[in-house]
Image 1 (tube, rainbow, N blue to C red):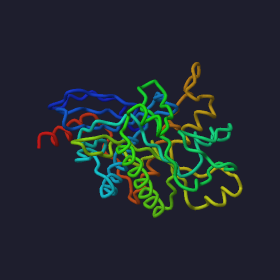
Image 2: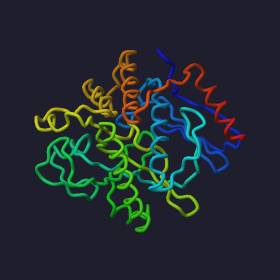
Image 3: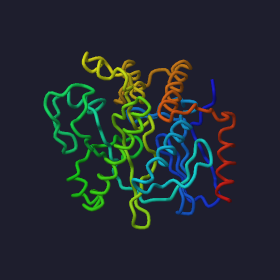
Image 4: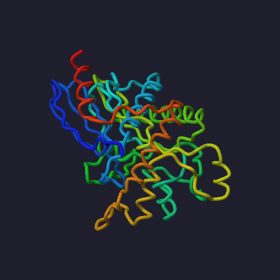
Length: 315
């Protein structure tokens, strides 16, 4: 079994602080740059699972870097460089305290809510008579607040965001515009690879008075993809779609009695389960980029990252 990067404790030149997120560790360099390390931790139902997934961090980081470059004409983004396979360095932005979730299809948590009778999510009214995995007439934006670790992200409407002053009306109009334009581009790129971009999330922040796209974009941790081939047939028959996303991890957990509720414990993650999740991430990388995945050296991952990032920061 290959090594997995599950925690980091770097001390880079000029480092002021570090924030350990669910799957990323973010280092603040002189309040000017952020060094974002994509670890191999995996979370589901807002819980970090006990074992890391080899190469997952590399997959997420390289897909995100690929898409940041492919969408930089739509809106400014924070990326400056990728000095290591698991690391992106970028401009430090002041983040909006909301995540912009955009959905092209009714599935996952939105389907679970719809099935239970919900017809409005985040102030967006949903049509009657929809079925699981059905395409929305137009993509919908269902923002959430950004939760602290251990807390659940909460749905929030546009009206509530403006009422609470989390963004000005002008800022929010731009966030919506960027979100829909990025999703359209992501959909077009996915279609060329035989995939459907089902839903995803974006995070934005400000730097020098300008709005920037931050963090990641279109990786399988925060996006869901269906295979285009066979989608219509499966939908017509009411069969589950073939997905490339983290939903298969959630489904494995649910099948084993875990949904992040109090009193539930995470099922055992065997080497076989860990390997199969790693293989699925690599499969997605190759599908979405159209390139063969090249595994980076997985011995002493920490040393490799420290060396590469330090060399970049000194340059």
